[in-house]
Amino acid sequence: MNVLSPDLNGLDVSRETVERLNTFVALFQKWAKAINLVAPSTLSAAWNRHVVDSVQIYALYPGPHTWIDLGSGGGFPGIVTGILLAETGGGWVHLVESNNKKAAFLRTAILETGARASVHAIRIEDAPAAIEKCDAISARALADLDLLLDFGLPWAERNPELRFFLHKGRDYQREIDKALGRWRFDLVKHASIVEPDSVVLELSNLSRKPQ
Image: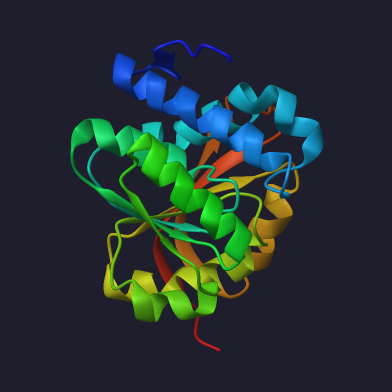
């Protein structure tokens, strides 16, 4: 098993949190052999490619917040966020994953790591009826920005302070330009610490433009 340094993107964590992350990666690699959690080519680089990539989300918005992680899949960044929240003793992550096999993996990961999270095995479109409010929304390799904002709008309307933290690849500017045709939002682009051409888009003050 890989041993993770306690220093994650400048975020100091306890030995217990390091052990939880190690437990999660071992579990992830075991389950990924049976079900398609991520691209097989990235399995051997799980730490940098997935864990550190997820930690940078929490580092941008640390503290005991309530998160919704859309299309949680293999647990990145949602389970990692939940593990980091376990150290604070507060906050929560609502993992939305409609695939039952992936949802079963996420439930097992929560049990074995003590992550502060719960799984909602429902379609994203149905999630606003099941989850009332949140402080932040995360999503990784899920959908085009325009569609992600459609998904998140019900929660943005309930909480004017809501923030989105969305991983995007090298084509992110095209997605932003497309989204600006329908939406108003404040935007901060954070350079990814893992992929040089990628970013984490932090959006706030979301509203739909008049038609």
